[in-house]
Image (cartoon, rainbow, N blue to C red; front, side, top):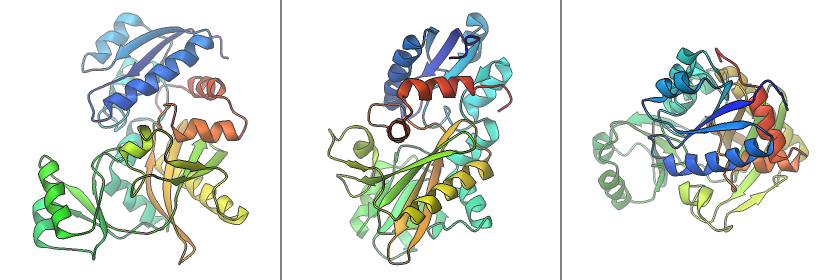
Length: 304
Protein backbone atom coordinates (compact mmCIF):
# COMPACT_ATOMS: atom_id res chain seq x y z
CA UNK A 1 0.00 0.00 0.00
CA UNK A 2 1.18 3.50 -0.83
CA UNK A 3 1.37 5.17 2.58
CA UNK A 4 1.05 8.64 1.01
CA UNK A 5 -2.64 7.98 0.37
CA UNK A 6 -4.23 8.12 3.80
CA UNK A 7 -7.29 10.33 3.31
CA UNK A 8 -9.44 8.88 0.53
CA UNK A 9 -12.64 10.47 -0.72
CA UNK A 10 -14.84 7.72 -2.09
CA UNK A 11 -17.49 9.08 -4.45
CA UNK A 12 -20.44 6.87 -5.35
CA UNK A 13 -24.20 7.01 -5.84
CA UNK A 14 -24.58 10.01 -8.09
CA UNK A 15 -27.48 11.06 -10.28
CA UNK A 16 -27.51 8.52 -13.11
CA UNK A 17 -29.74 5.54 -13.90
CA UNK A 18 -26.93 3.40 -12.47
CA UNK A 19 -27.03 5.04 -9.03
CA UNK A 20 -28.05 1.81 -7.29
CA UNK A 21 -25.14 -0.13 -8.77
CA UNK A 22 -22.70 2.65 -7.94
CA UNK A 23 -23.76 2.53 -4.29
CA UNK A 24 -23.11 -1.22 -4.21
CA UNK A 25 -19.69 -0.70 -5.82
CA UNK A 26 -18.95 2.04 -3.32
CA UNK A 27 -19.88 -0.19 -0.39
CA UNK A 28 -17.47 -2.92 -1.52
CA UNK A 29 -14.67 -0.43 -2.23
CA UNK A 30 -15.20 1.17 1.21
CA UNK A 31 -14.73 -2.21 2.92
CA UNK A 32 -11.49 -2.71 1.02
CA UNK A 33 -10.17 0.78 1.73
CA UNK A 34 -10.88 0.19 5.41
CA UNK A 35 -8.99 -3.10 5.35
CA UNK A 36 -6.11 -1.32 3.65
CA UNK A 37 -5.94 1.18 6.49
CA UNK A 38 -7.13 4.35 4.76
CA UNK A 39 -9.21 7.15 6.25
CA UNK A 40 -12.39 7.19 4.15
CA UNK A 41 -14.62 10.14 3.33
CA UNK A 42 -17.81 8.71 1.84
CA UNK A 43 -19.57 11.10 -0.52
CA UNK A 44 -22.86 10.54 -2.33
CA UNK A 45 -21.83 12.64 -5.30
CA UNK A 46 -23.99 15.48 -6.59
CA UNK A 47 -23.51 18.88 -8.18
CA UNK A 48 -21.98 20.16 -4.92
CA UNK A 49 -19.03 17.78 -5.35
CA UNK A 50 -16.33 20.41 -5.91
CA UNK A 51 -17.34 22.21 -2.71
CA UNK A 52 -17.15 18.93 -0.77
CA UNK A 53 -13.68 18.23 -2.14
CA UNK A 54 -12.44 21.70 -1.21
CA UNK A 55 -13.84 21.32 2.31
CA UNK A 56 -12.48 17.81 2.90
CA UNK A 57 -9.09 18.20 1.18
CA UNK A 58 -8.57 14.48 0.46
CA UNK A 59 -5.23 13.10 -0.68
CA UNK A 60 -6.90 11.10 -3.43
CA UNK A 61 -10.38 10.50 -4.85
CA UNK A 62 -11.66 7.02 -5.67
CA UNK A 63 -14.35 7.36 -8.32
CA UNK A 64 -16.92 4.57 -7.90
CA UNK A 65 -19.61 6.31 -9.94
CA UNK A 66 -21.28 4.61 -12.90
CA UNK A 67 -23.28 5.95 -15.83
CA UNK A 68 -23.92 9.44 -17.15
CA UNK A 69 -22.35 12.35 -15.28
CA UNK A 70 -20.21 9.93 -13.27
CA UNK A 71 -18.14 8.36 -16.04
CA UNK A 72 -18.84 10.44 -19.15
CA UNK A 73 -16.31 13.17 -18.46
CA UNK A 74 -18.54 15.51 -16.46
CA UNK A 75 -17.40 14.47 -12.98
CA UNK A 76 -13.87 14.15 -14.34
CA UNK A 77 -13.96 17.87 -15.22
CA UNK A 78 -14.85 18.62 -11.59
CA UNK A 79 -12.06 16.38 -10.34
CA UNK A 80 -9.59 18.15 -12.63
CA UNK A 81 -10.70 21.52 -11.22
CA UNK A 82 -10.03 20.25 -7.70
CA UNK A 83 -6.41 19.43 -8.66
CA UNK A 84 -6.72 16.23 -6.60
CA UNK A 85 -5.43 12.87 -7.80
CA UNK A 86 -8.29 10.62 -8.91
CA UNK A 87 -8.79 7.11 -10.22
CA UNK A 88 -9.82 5.73 -13.61
CA UNK A 89 -9.83 7.54 -16.95
CA UNK A 90 -9.76 11.27 -17.55
CA UNK A 91 -12.14 13.67 -19.27
CA UNK A 92 -11.51 12.90 -22.94
CA UNK A 93 -11.34 9.11 -22.67
CA UNK A 94 -14.44 9.07 -20.49
CA UNK A 95 -16.39 11.20 -22.96
CA UNK A 96 -15.45 9.04 -25.93
CA UNK A 97 -16.02 5.70 -24.24
CA UNK A 98 -19.48 6.65 -22.95
CA UNK A 99 -20.58 7.94 -26.37
CA UNK A 100 -20.99 4.69 -28.30
CA UNK A 101 -21.41 6.54 -31.59
CA UNK A 102 -18.13 8.42 -31.20
CA UNK A 103 -16.14 5.47 -29.87
CA UNK A 104 -17.39 3.34 -32.79
CA UNK A 105 -15.74 5.78 -35.21
CA UNK A 106 -12.40 5.06 -33.56
CA UNK A 107 -12.97 1.29 -33.65
CA UNK A 108 -13.84 1.34 -37.34
CA UNK A 109 -11.01 3.71 -38.26
CA UNK A 110 -8.55 1.30 -36.65
CA UNK A 111 -9.94 -1.82 -38.37
CA UNK A 112 -11.60 -3.26 -35.28
CA UNK A 113 -14.77 -5.09 -36.28
CA UNK A 114 -17.97 -3.38 -35.10
CA UNK A 115 -21.57 -4.46 -35.80
CA UNK A 116 -23.40 -2.51 -38.51
CA UNK A 117 -25.02 0.38 -36.64
CA UNK A 118 -27.18 3.41 -37.45
CA UNK A 119 -27.76 6.48 -35.27
CA UNK A 120 -31.49 7.14 -35.27
CA UNK A 121 -34.39 8.77 -33.50
CA UNK A 122 -37.16 6.55 -32.17
CA UNK A 123 -39.68 8.25 -34.47
CA UNK A 124 -37.56 7.43 -37.51
CA UNK A 125 -37.23 3.85 -36.33
CA UNK A 126 -40.99 3.33 -36.35
CA UNK A 127 -41.16 4.35 -40.00
CA UNK A 128 -37.93 2.80 -41.28
CA UNK A 129 -36.74 -0.68 -40.40
CA UNK A 130 -33.01 -0.55 -41.05
CA UNK A 131 -32.28 -4.19 -40.21
CA UNK A 132 -34.09 -7.49 -40.39
CA UNK A 133 -35.37 -8.92 -37.13
CA UNK A 134 -33.85 -9.47 -34.68
CA UNK A 135 -31.80 -6.33 -34.12
CA UNK A 136 -30.59 -4.29 -31.14
CA UNK A 137 -31.68 -0.89 -29.87
CA UNK A 138 -29.40 0.79 -27.36
CA UNK A 139 -28.92 4.32 -26.02
CA UNK A 140 -26.11 6.38 -27.48
CA UNK A 141 -24.70 7.07 -24.01
CA UNK A 142 -25.48 4.73 -21.10
CA UNK A 143 -23.76 1.91 -19.26
CA UNK A 144 -24.66 -1.39 -17.56
CA UNK A 145 -26.90 -2.29 -20.52
CA UNK A 146 -29.45 0.31 -19.38
CA UNK A 147 -31.98 0.81 -22.18
CA UNK A 148 -30.66 -2.04 -24.35
CA UNK A 149 -33.21 -4.38 -25.97
CA UNK A 150 -33.33 -7.10 -28.59
CA UNK A 151 -36.10 -6.27 -31.07
CA UNK A 152 -37.69 -9.39 -32.54
CA UNK A 153 -40.99 -7.99 -33.91
CA UNK A 154 -42.77 -4.69 -34.62
CA UNK A 155 -44.55 -4.80 -31.27
CA UNK A 156 -41.16 -4.72 -29.54
CA UNK A 157 -40.43 -1.37 -31.19
CA UNK A 158 -43.69 0.04 -29.87
CA UNK A 159 -42.96 -1.27 -26.40
CA UNK A 160 -39.41 0.12 -26.42
CA UNK A 161 -40.64 3.53 -27.61
CA UNK A 162 -43.27 3.67 -24.86
CA UNK A 163 -40.62 2.95 -22.21
CA UNK A 164 -37.97 5.30 -23.62
CA UNK A 165 -39.82 8.40 -24.79
CA UNK A 166 -37.17 10.68 -23.29
CA UNK A 167 -34.35 9.28 -25.45
CA UNK A 168 -33.54 11.63 -28.32
CA UNK A 169 -31.07 9.35 -30.06
CA UNK A 170 -30.60 5.61 -30.09
CA UNK A 171 -28.32 3.21 -31.92
CA UNK A 172 -29.91 0.60 -34.15
CA UNK A 173 -27.50 -2.29 -34.43
CA UNK A 174 -27.36 -5.62 -36.20
CA UNK A 175 -27.77 -8.63 -33.96
CA UNK A 176 -24.78 -10.95 -33.87
CA UNK A 177 -25.48 -14.34 -32.36
CA UNK A 178 -22.61 -15.63 -30.30
CA UNK A 179 -21.00 -15.72 -26.86
CA UNK A 180 -20.12 -12.46 -25.13
CA UNK A 181 -16.48 -12.15 -24.08
CA UNK A 182 -15.46 -9.47 -21.61
CA UNK A 183 -11.83 -8.43 -21.29
CA UNK A 184 -10.34 -6.57 -18.34
CA UNK A 185 -7.32 -4.34 -18.84
CA UNK A 186 -5.28 -3.27 -15.82
CA UNK A 187 -2.76 -0.56 -16.61
CA UNK A 188 -0.90 -0.83 -19.88
CA UNK A 189 -0.15 -4.54 -19.98
CA UNK A 190 -2.24 -6.84 -17.77
CA UNK A 191 -5.30 -8.44 -19.36
CA UNK A 192 -7.75 -11.21 -18.62
CA UNK A 193 -11.01 -12.42 -20.14
CA UNK A 194 -14.25 -14.14 -19.20
CA UNK A 195 -17.20 -15.59 -21.12
CA UNK A 196 -20.76 -14.71 -20.15
CA UNK A 197 -23.68 -17.12 -20.49
CA UNK A 198 -26.60 -14.94 -19.31
CA UNK A 199 -29.90 -16.17 -17.93
CA UNK A 200 -31.76 -13.70 -20.17
CA UNK A 201 -31.51 -13.09 -23.93
CA UNK A 202 -28.29 -11.15 -23.38
CA UNK A 203 -26.13 -9.79 -20.58
CA UNK A 204 -28.63 -7.14 -19.52
CA UNK A 205 -28.88 -5.02 -16.35
CA UNK A 206 -30.69 -7.76 -14.41
CA UNK A 207 -28.24 -10.46 -15.50
CA UNK A 208 -25.30 -8.29 -14.46
CA UNK A 209 -26.47 -7.48 -10.97
CA UNK A 210 -29.62 -9.28 -9.79
CA UNK A 211 -29.82 -12.80 -11.19
CA UNK A 212 -28.93 -14.80 -8.05
CA UNK A 213 -26.17 -16.69 -9.79
CA UNK A 214 -28.21 -17.85 -12.80
CA UNK A 215 -25.88 -16.12 -15.25
CA UNK A 216 -22.78 -18.24 -15.81
CA UNK A 217 -19.34 -16.64 -15.70
CA UNK A 218 -16.99 -18.97 -17.56
CA UNK A 219 -13.29 -18.49 -17.02
CA UNK A 220 -11.23 -19.25 -18.94
CA UNK A 221 -13.59 -18.59 -21.85
CA UNK A 222 -14.49 -21.50 -24.12
CA UNK A 223 -12.08 -20.32 -26.78
CA UNK A 224 -8.77 -21.60 -28.07
CA UNK A 225 -5.62 -20.20 -26.51
CA UNK A 226 -4.92 -18.28 -29.72
CA UNK A 227 -8.43 -16.78 -29.68
CA UNK A 228 -8.02 -15.68 -26.05
CA UNK A 229 -4.72 -14.02 -26.90
CA UNK A 230 -6.36 -12.35 -29.90
CA UNK A 231 -9.33 -10.87 -28.03
CA UNK A 232 -7.18 -9.70 -25.11
CA UNK A 233 -4.79 -7.95 -27.51
CA UNK A 234 -7.79 -6.26 -29.14
CA UNK A 235 -9.00 -4.99 -25.75
CA UNK A 236 -5.57 -3.61 -24.87
CA UNK A 237 -5.42 -1.90 -28.28
CA UNK A 238 -8.82 -0.31 -27.68
CA UNK A 239 -7.87 0.75 -24.13
CA UNK A 240 -4.87 2.61 -25.53
CA UNK A 241 -6.65 4.03 -28.58
CA UNK A 242 -9.34 5.62 -26.38
CA UNK A 243 -6.67 6.86 -23.97
CA UNK A 244 -7.98 4.99 -20.93
CA UNK A 245 -6.15 5.05 -17.60
CA UNK A 246 -6.29 2.57 -14.75
CA UNK A 247 -8.69 -0.26 -15.51
CA UNK A 248 -11.21 -0.83 -18.30
CA UNK A 249 -13.55 -3.59 -19.41
CA UNK A 250 -14.30 -4.18 -23.08
CA UNK A 251 -17.22 -6.22 -24.39
CA UNK A 252 -16.99 -8.38 -27.49
CA UNK A 253 -19.30 -10.78 -29.32
CA UNK A 254 -17.65 -13.78 -30.94
CA UNK A 255 -19.23 -14.71 -34.26
CA UNK A 256 -18.49 -18.44 -34.44
CA UNK A 257 -19.61 -18.69 -38.06
CA UNK A 258 -17.01 -16.14 -39.15
CA UNK A 259 -14.52 -16.86 -36.33
CA UNK A 260 -14.31 -13.12 -35.66
CA UNK A 261 -14.61 -10.85 -32.64
CA UNK A 262 -16.89 -7.81 -32.84
CA UNK A 263 -16.43 -5.08 -30.28
CA UNK A 264 -19.54 -3.71 -28.59
CA UNK A 265 -18.18 -1.08 -26.22
CA UNK A 266 -15.54 -0.17 -23.67
CA UNK A 267 -16.32 0.68 -20.05
CA UNK A 268 -13.89 3.02 -18.27
CA UNK A 269 -15.26 2.47 -14.75
CA UNK A 270 -16.16 -1.20 -14.39
CA UNK A 271 -18.32 -2.25 -11.47
CA UNK A 272 -16.87 -3.37 -8.15
CA UNK A 273 -19.98 -5.22 -6.95
CA UNK A 274 -19.96 -8.86 -5.73
CA UNK A 275 -20.97 -10.00 -9.24
CA UNK A 276 -18.72 -7.64 -11.22
CA UNK A 277 -16.42 -9.09 -13.85
CA UNK A 278 -13.15 -7.21 -13.41
CA UNK A 279 -12.65 -8.34 -9.78
CA UNK A 280 -13.55 -11.88 -10.85
CA UNK A 281 -11.04 -11.83 -13.69
CA UNK A 282 -8.38 -10.35 -11.39
CA UNK A 283 -9.01 -13.07 -8.80
CA UNK A 284 -8.58 -15.77 -11.43
CA UNK A 285 -5.18 -14.29 -12.22
CA UNK A 286 -4.12 -14.22 -8.58
CA UNK A 287 -5.02 -10.60 -7.77
CA UNK A 288 -7.21 -10.25 -4.68
CA UNK A 289 -9.92 -7.59 -4.43
CA UNK A 290 -7.86 -5.59 -1.95
CA UNK A 291 -4.80 -5.81 -4.20
CA UNK A 292 -6.92 -4.59 -7.13
CA UNK A 293 -8.31 -1.65 -5.15
CA UNK A 294 -4.84 -0.80 -3.87
CA UNK A 295 -3.48 -0.83 -7.42
CA UNK A 296 -6.29 1.41 -8.70
CA UNK A 297 -5.74 3.83 -5.83
CA UNK A 298 -1.99 4.03 -6.35
CA UNK A 299 -2.55 4.58 -10.08
CA UNK A 300 -4.56 7.74 -9.36
CA UNK A 301 -3.21 11.04 -10.62
CA UNK A 302 -4.23 14.52 -11.75
CA UNK A 303 -4.60 15.35 -15.46
CA UNK A 304 -5.67 11.86 -16.47
